Length: 159
Image 1: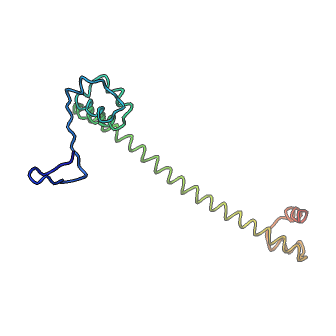
Image 2: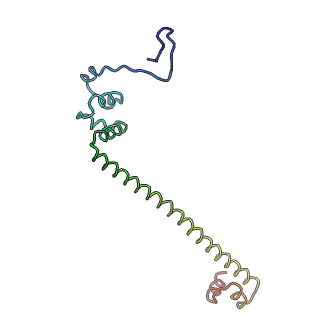
């Protein structure tokens, strides 16, 4: 049923709908907890009923509403304790998120540095191999590349 103007009978909005629910009839009917509308009606009618536990397990929105209702029903002291605990949980979550970001940035930085070092080492090895192929003496290769004699011999064997 759409919301209409009485005398001219034109539709105010085709987006908003109004549904009439006769709660006494629903109370007496067989409850189907899989029906979302019926679940909400049962919640508004009696949020403390035994069937609510089953309904909240199947409908996360009603569970959220139940949590909000329980919060509103708390006395001031319990509400403050609840809010303090909630703040503590949010703070821990925020700290973990920050630690992840810092750890990721540190990992990226260390990875870049390690990659640069490996790149320099590979370039040095290419230079040594090129100098060997050109017939440059071992002494000059060692002095110009700052490589050990043992490492030079190892490279010679491989190339």
